[in-house]
Image (cartoon, rainbow over all chains, first blue to last red; front, side, top):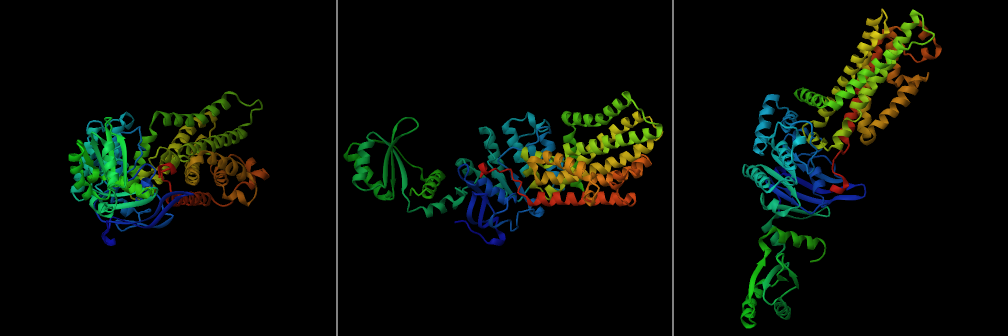
Amino acid sequence: MIDSSPTKSLIQFASVTKLYGKVLGVNDINLTLPQGAFGLLGPNGAGKSTLLNLLTGQLLPTRGTVRVLGRNPRNNPELMKRIGYCPGFEGLYTSISGLNWVTFLLEMHGVGRLQARERAADCMALVGMAEGMTRPISDYSRGMRQRTKIAQAIAHDPDLLILDEPLSGLDPIGRAEMTDVLRRRVADGGSLILASHVLHEIEAVTDSFLLISGGRLLASGTAEEVHELLFDLPVEIQIRCNDPQRLSGLIMEHGLADSVSLGRSQSGDELLRVATRQTAEFSAQLPNWIARYNLRVDEMQTADDSLQTLFNSLMKIHRGEL
Amino acid sequence: MTVLFATVRFELSRVMTAGRMTWWFVLAGFPIVISGLIRIFPMSDAPEEADSHLVWSVAIYMLVPCITCAMGVLLSAGPAIATELEQRSWVYLATRPNGIFWLLLGKYLVAVAWATTAAVAGLTIAVLFAGQDTIIRIWLGMAGLCVLSSMTYAAIFMLIGAIAPQRAMLFCVTWTAGVEGFISLIPAVINRMTVQYRLRTLFVDWVQPGDEIQDEPLFALSLAEGPWYVQILWLVTLTVVFLAAAQVLAHKREFTAAAESDV
């Protein structure tokens, strides 16, 4: 699991709980992250936005303490100089241009007007807004607004970038371009917290992630580290073959699976889904069955290397299904 | 100071829209129209010359420093926080170094400037309808009252906006009617805490509408004692206290845009 020395840590949550009246935002989160890039992954309503609001000092924890770069984020101007935040909602002034808006936000960091305008123009160009930056924001498409939001977050070159669903509303090209911008920041040593409910958006930028659901932190670390926690959990294997009923019978007969189910793939083919903890034994038996019972396996897939499997497994644990 | 200038410049650019400028002209036009109507349709028992100065100065005092200034800052300072929260732009500013402090201060200064300029523009033309040889005295006195009125009411409305952003306008109107309209006229100690009590005293001192008004027993009890600078000190103190309270509240409260549904 991720851990680091508190003095050099990126963020620290110590028994942090946040309640909105009787509604639970996040529940008893203990976490210390080192400098680096992390994906904050969880379904809608999992508590991601609450966590980010606690990180940026917009919310006070009901219980526990939050530290960002070693400091309390609440009303902390020194820390705000080092943080760039892109919220999950728009909230842009529509009557002014993107360039003027980013310039103003830079000026709020104490940057002189001319320098701020120059830097804002550079950042707008960096996010692919060189052409439209002088137009009023009301004329922007959703993707352009998203790019502008990212520009204001990175304009003052923060040590820590906190992004809430930064790729939502972008077309595939925009996603690729913005992912590239974020990757380059990470490669240059910048720290990043990237919240998303879409797994591959996070995978494209970092392999370290925090999984949150129901206000609780389910897991944190790299995919490999979380895998180590899950080695005793069943691996899900999907098999497309000519006789899935026969194969499922054989698997159950030999007691090699925790569960077997039949379903259909997106293309309509019948799929056999096997959850097993005895992958070695299963792999040894399968060729024998193929030879003896004239089975034809067209495709066999363990989504084991994908974060999706981890995510699914952790969510099942959280729901008590495993 | 760079940040304050930037905030004021940015907020000024945001009020230079067709909609906001229309309101500015409506505000400026209000005392002009009413004064024009008074001039065009004089009272049947037209006052003597001395009374005319009293009538015009009281009318202009009510129209400009009281109504136009209060309305101006009501429209600009009252919803200052609410508009940022409603359009969800608050967080962009709150995550800047001392962002909330500069934002509120910048919005306050722009609100005062917006209301004062409208009021003084209206005053400048409205006072011409008075047709008095005391026009300059009335104008100078009223212009000073406009600055003080806008300055103090804006601070009060900023505080109300920080206390109840979603109902800011309603509470501002209620405060103005209840406290400044009613309580300030009660001849008791409580009226000394109102802005009107101080403004009224300065009005009598600076514009000198006539002895008659001070001879009225009820009105005399509604005027403060002491020189003009004491009244200004009171107004400045009230402004600083209300503004500071608004700042403290805005920093203490969790004005996050994340609704419970966003958790």
